[in-house]
Amino acid sequence: MKRAISLIFVSISLFYSCGSGDAGSKHDKSDASMDNKQIKLITVDPGHFHAALVQKSMYEQVSPDVHVYAPDGPDIVQHLNRINGYNTRADDPTSWNEIIYKGDNFFEKMLEEKAGNVVVLSGNNKKKAEYITKSINAGLNVLADKPMIIRSEDFSELVNAFKSAEENRVLLYDIMTERFEITTILQKLLSMNSTVFGTLVNGTEKEPAITKVSVHHFSKIVSGSPLIRPGWFFDVDQQGEGLVDITTHLVDLVQWECFNGQILSPSDVKMVSARRWPTLISPEEFKGVTGLESFPGYLEKDIKDGKLNVYSNGEMVYTLKGVFTKISVEWKYEAPAGGGDTHYSTMRGTQCNLTIKQGPDQKYVPTLYVENIKGISTDEFISKLKAALNEMPYDSLTFENVGANSIKINIPQNYRVSHEEHFAQVTSKYLEYLKEGKLPDWEVPCMITKYYTTTSALKLARTK
Image (cartoon, rainbow, N blue to C red; front, side):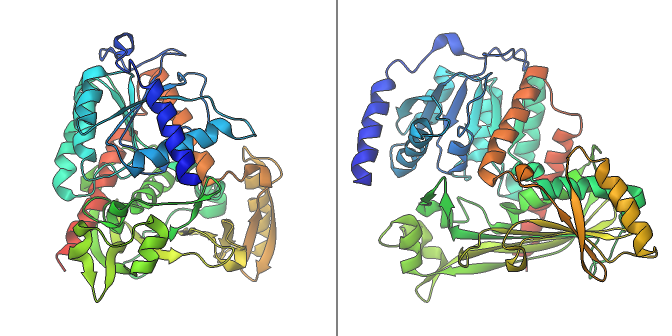
């Protein structure tokens, strides 16, 4: 039945695809600033579900007509089904009109027609650097899902793409959803309060000042349905290894939280160590999450003893402006009952540590703790913490003692925004930048530094 519905929807979409070359919507590359109602999205090869999440909400400035260019196959079918699900949901349905072009020359056709002015890239990462470069050179803005690049060999091309974006006066930006997660926001704000946090310590290789650990799962529920992943998602040559994928978010948060508004450069990064290891996937598990009966030929290189070795896990230790940082990412097949993807983060200050936990003790809900109070009486510290929380731009924040040296921050439910909803927040922020015609001065240097960090870690890990 699901297959029948998919085929019906694709047929409807093909009907709407007539006349997809809208000459009147070509972008004037002389100016990235835009007024309301002038933004038209172009979705290119949407192989990852994040492409659909950008459209889970409507935006006042964005036309409902979205041009989609992709090769024929299951990726485009799943993408269109997700958009259709948003359009037909009972609660606050969207009204997107997907105008589809399918063919092997999909990218060339997109560049030829330039039917919009913002290219959304979220799919197979193997050619993402090329797609970014050619879109920017064509005078198109680009909103790219992470990672922008997955190999150190592509780093110089990304740097040149940012230079071209500046010359063409268009904006290249990546989707950093975790900046909008409430415990991360509060961790950042408290770390900026010297009366509570003091100052960030430099740490050491064995005791870093900052530690961030992320655990993800191949099998999960997205928008209420089991996620079907494409087979290529398990090929690190197409998706990227763990050290250059999820770590993009974690490296970004280190920069965003600890060096707020500072212009960073690759010279600020010193890689100390890096390692990688595989997640083993059985044929049955692979079928369960992809629907494919067997491993595709391009995965044969990674099969050992009948199981797929996916190098989705990695750990790096590096210094950023002399501050020791440890980043770790791990992929498992499936979360425990009631669980999901988890995030752990610690920032060590001279007054206290700020730690986010998301394990079974927290019922898998991100929870912020103020821990290990140093050199100050508990009563005095609590008084300072209370004052700091009262100054926050969030109402009704409270706290409670949960141990001799641990205080839990209680966050009202209305500030708990799901991962899927973060995509609308990132997109809305990008739309603000488009209207202004520029990104903050620190964003581009920090994006360059971020991808230098991830690709350098992978390069080091692969030499061992």
